[in-house]
Image (cartoon, rainbow, N blue to C red; front, top):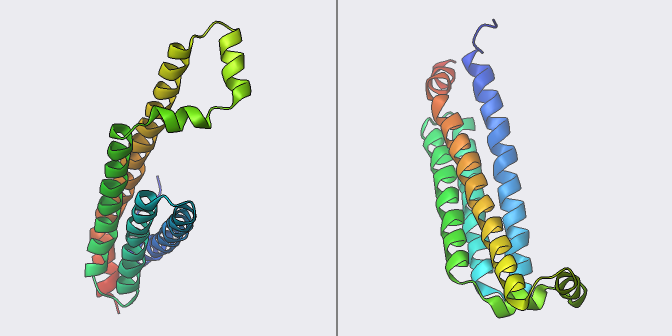
Length: 169
């Protein structure tokens, strides 16, 4: 069994993770917002910007910790909870705004003809497309709860070690 990490090592690892995660969230969601705006999807562009805000919050929290301010840890935890809320709101919004005409338009003619050949009816295909759509958003919601919840818990559980590291000179 290994001894617990020194507080300064815990802080260093936490800062590295926060910088990586915050930068990744900011870059990916910013690109998502730009792509959505270019396609004319205003709602997705706004959601992308809100998610980018979570990355900025996380980077701000890491910056505060680097400046030896303990309140930076609250920013890290809050960024994960905020991100989880925004993504879950987006998932719920998408589930309640299902548009079969748009989704069926995305289904290629070849795929539709193949499904008809193996015995699916148009109604079956519509139901299948809806199930896949709902499954995708359910998976996104579950992964978000697990990942962002896990990250918030990870940051929160290192509260004592971070406080000890910041108290050291």
